[in-house]
Image 1 (tube, one colour):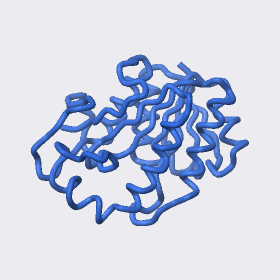
Image 2: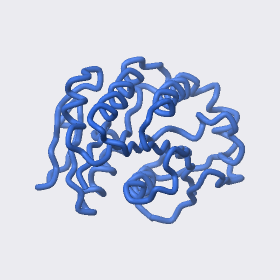
Image 3: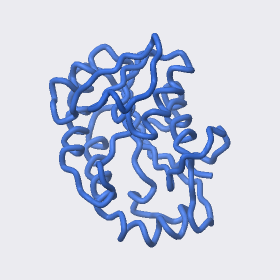
Image 4: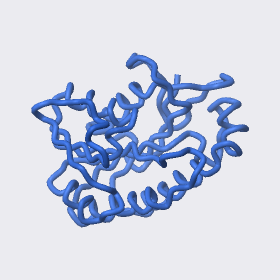
Length: 209
C-alpha cells in the first residue's frame, strides 16, 4: 500500500515509518526537517515540506492509498494554529484527490468523557495540557466534518517503551490505573492495523495498557 505519514520525524511518526516499511508499504514521509528522520529504505521517500503550505500537502497526498498523521504542536503548552490549519489542508487535499482513508493520532484527554483513562488524564491533563487538548479538539472537529473514512485514535500517556503488540483497544476500553500508559511503538502498531481493518471507520478508539 502507498501511504503518506505526516509528522514522520516525531517520536511516534518515526515508529510509524519503521513499522510501515517492515510491513512492506511504500512510505512517503512528510517532514519539515529531513535530518531528524534517521531512517533509510528503498521504499521510503522523504518529502520536505510544511503543512502550512496547501500545495505541498496536496502534492504529497496525490496518488496515495491512505494518510496517517502524528502531527502535534511543538510544545504541549502552546496552542499552534498552524497545525490546526495544516490538518485542514490535509482534509481538503484528501477530498480533492479522492484519498479516503485517514488515520489521525489524537489524545485520550480530548474526549468529553474521560472515565477509564486514569486519574492523571481525567483530572490533571485538562488543566496542565489544556492548550494541547484545545488543539486536538479543533483538529478533530475538522476531521469529523469531512467526508473521509477517518479513524481518530485516542492513546493514553505516551512512553518510549518496546513494541509489544499487547495492548487494549476499542471505543470503551478502560483502566483503573493512576497513570495509564501506552508505548508509541504500540500506538503505531494499532494505527497501521487500521489500514486494512475497517472496524473503526468514523470512530474514535482508545489504545492503552
